[in-house]
Image 1 (cartoon, helix red, strand yellow):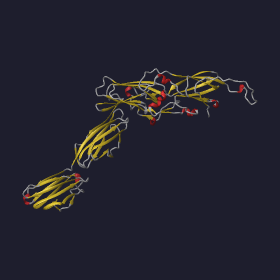
Image 2 (cartoon, helix red, strand yellow):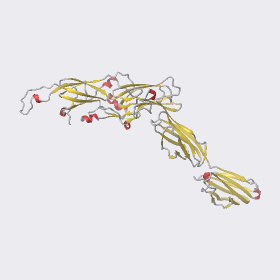
Image 3 (spheres, rainbow, N blue to C red):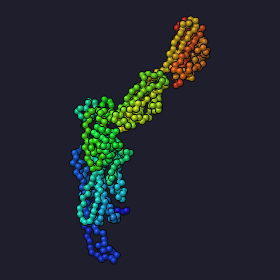
Image 4 (spheres, helix red, strand yellow):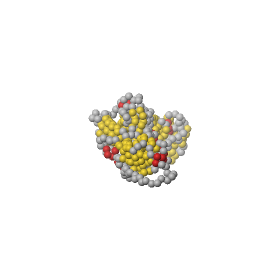
Length: 529
């Protein structure tokens, strides 16, 4: 249906001058013509009567009508419907309407002509918002009206425009009872509607909610005051809530709008969540054209008040202070988010020192990756490194609202654990026994070497009764056992020097040079790698 458009640059009631003329035979008689009426629509907006706050428009701006779109749908004569866009409206609109019943829909302060629409299209029309400033563009608020008109005579008809926005006046105060060290960091809104339909009720999809919204960073302030404008968000009620203390994350409807206050105490993040709505217990509806005043008094860090959530990462079992190469370092971490037990959290880590790999619950995680975890579920973290040196790992736990806490653990990886004993009781007879003790990861299929290039003198060298010759590689014991010994027997005639190198599955080695003669004590010297 085409609706004629009338652009009125100023609102003037223009009387029509009618002149007499001859009527053609086909022209309908005056009594056959649809009867018309001269109607004046008088615009009204309700006063605000609110105090000036940071972010607020003044009273005149909140009541301003800077442009106006009118849609009048005749219920029985569609051709009699009209559409008007007025760029600079005053307080009244005069027009002639055919007698009958009308649906009147009005939009103000959209900034441009929304265009021709059917009634169904207008009822589905959406106002989008991506940031807070969108709602106060041109220092005005979008308004709407929907009324039923019965026109049967000339007259004045009042039209009341309602603001499509919700106004929230918020104050946050640290009470005198707050302990020293409790600090405010930021205030923002979460789950704010990203769109609204001016002619319908609004409960937007979760994916169309904005978080955070209108955030401000704080530093040292004990009191915060601000005005916010946002769109209608009707999330319903929870009649099971009995008190304000139960108005928390676990009981609020999904998508309910809330104030998020980030603070800290004693190095731990504190998050205060205050839900908005028609009351302080059961109602979670934010309605357009309503003015809400919320005063938040923070009494201290409390785990009893269920609106306060603490995010933390507990190191229940730290790694041992030292590990041998190829030995797994183990630790137990537990994420914490009080009063939000179903929240998903993410755990990341940074390897500040070290060259190894890390796994969480047997799943390898590379630096920069993350695991999704839940509060209260212990996490087994394992770390393996094949090179000696210090290890420092920083874990970063982030909750569903972007708050993070970090914890750091450390250990040290030492060279391969090798011990030895020397039996030189028959050294003057030319016989010496040296027993090397190896850790489990060095035995079995991983070769050890008797270095031919550094051997001087002569000696029969045997391992467990089997002769070894310079250049031989050999294995020790059975790698299925936890430890093994490498007994080397030497039978020499004068003086002898030999080098033996032991390695593990990761390519780490330790080399020892052995010197013996019949007049001086046996020396076993570890060589620098």
